[in-house]
Figure 1 (cartoon, helix red, strand yellow):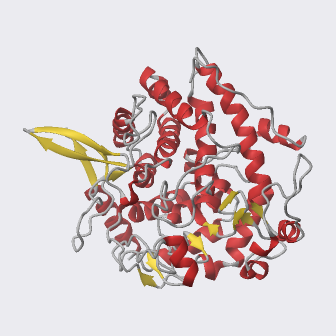
Figure 2 (cartoon, rainbow, N blue to C red):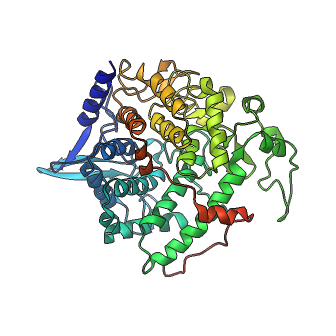
Figure 3 (cartoon, one colour):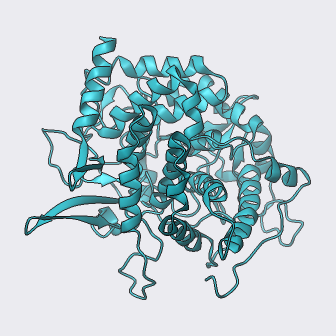
Length: 476
């Protein structure tokens, strides 16, 4: 059964490969023969990362290289005044191959066709993270140093680092602009985007050549990394000590000496949370903004924060402790909850807009997503908890093949196949293979992980981030 599962997963992954002009260029999102294709027959940037890591671990980098080149070619390059066109530097959410008059073309979707018409902010970050993984796996630094790649990296930085109507070092984004691609009350500064943004900034510091205008970008990256790291570690962190601080907050504080900087009221602390945390557990909150802390636990953001060292070593250990102590809530019968807890009742109506796909304990609203298995494996390996990684994989092994590789699972503990989940979901298949490969060869972890940033950490130990850096007018 074990060997059969691996063989069938590999066969299914290879069957999902998308070809363009005779060359492999990505993988389609799903190949469910019983469901309408919709846009699941396209290659999504965030989805392909799981497949790409498998190919890199298996010594098959050509498809990843082709993907990186193709997506860079689809990057929006023109500065437009038309609000209906993608902003300069934006990467598409997905692309497909179309044929006209016998010629193949790549057609990108920047959100124009997506539900709610939201442009993806995470695509450019995943592209950067995957570029670094490709370079580390192949040693092909020349690709990243190509002029078009250097320009593409600069355009991503310009998109993310230029001044906006915002005073935080975190990125302000709308609902639906990342893995949670429907309305789920994550408008603002969601953790997942901040973790990906941090990893992308660390990547640019490694891959951007320090010449010409790049020097100014690199200075801006250093300053933003310091501010972002300080902000997330200090203000997003939730443990019992932090809860006690929030519980005793006074509102309406003003000035530099304010303790309650975001005017969060103690009554917003949910009753479930006080008993949910132990003295050794903690996690990074889902969102932070004016008068708001989103106390929900978001799986991808917390795991990525561990993997890329956005969380401190002590915080990462507390996150691991939380997952172990709340195993039934977060893992249950299928790793891992995309968020916990689900929003229900009147809150569900208001927060999701009565979304019938995001009913409580389904899809984005507390559903269990097998793709998060490889993130969980990577985080546990980094923290020396291989036992938890193996335990989670054993749970997944019992169900994924018999259930035909579903997109997600429903229910408080993930017992049910998702009501509208596609089967033969490619990133589910790839997550299983990636987890197996990581456990068999933990050195693969270097493709996606970052060590602690000693320079930034040393600065933060002194009590505050470095001073800000701004672009000169000619760069913007």
